[in-house]
Amino acid sequence: MSHCCSCHGSTVASKATQILKDEHRVIEGVLDSVEQMLRSSRIDKTFFTNALDFFRNFADGCHHHKEEDELFPVLEAAGVPNDGGPIGCMLNEHEQGRRLLKRVADSLDAAAAGEPAAVAAVQTASGDYISLLRFHIQKEDNVLFNLADQMLSEAQQKAMIEAFDRAEQHNG
Image 1 (tube, rainbow, N blue to C red):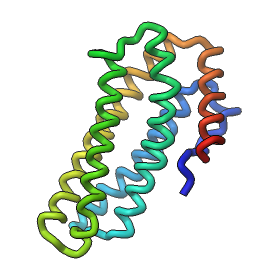
Image 2 (image 1 turned 60 degrees about the vertical axis):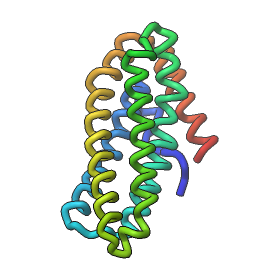
Image 3 (image 1 turned 90 degrees about the horizontal axis):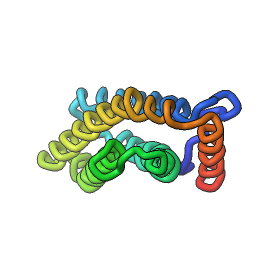
Image 4 (image 1 turned 180 degrees about the vertical axis):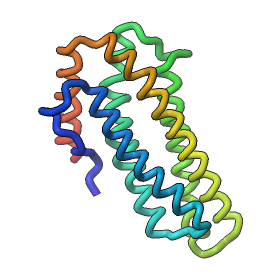
């Protein structure tokens, strides 16, 4: 699977934040699927392996990469605080998400084999990840990206879209 996401047409998007919001909708769709799988109480190893691949490669490897390497440094340079501010909060939540995905991955084989403690671990870590990401996405969409849209010039938004495209070509 590709490590990056070509789910936008940068010729259509005029704001880097819109690309990130569009990617959030894709991520939410997979969160919905994981939620549905959790309701079934089955641990389907293939399903969870594919979901982990998506979250690690698309959500974290591509989407969070764009935020961490492109958006956040530009916002910080424009005066948005990192330590104790919204950027630091988002970075901390990205790390929490990585730890939860690792917990799912570490327990998946045993859970698929029916080990009750591992099943519980996969269900709990997956549920915590879903909750974390849903809340995280809401904060980015409704607070941080609105702030970015107010602070960043059209030229800065365009430069960020170009940086996103370069990152996708490099990692894709």
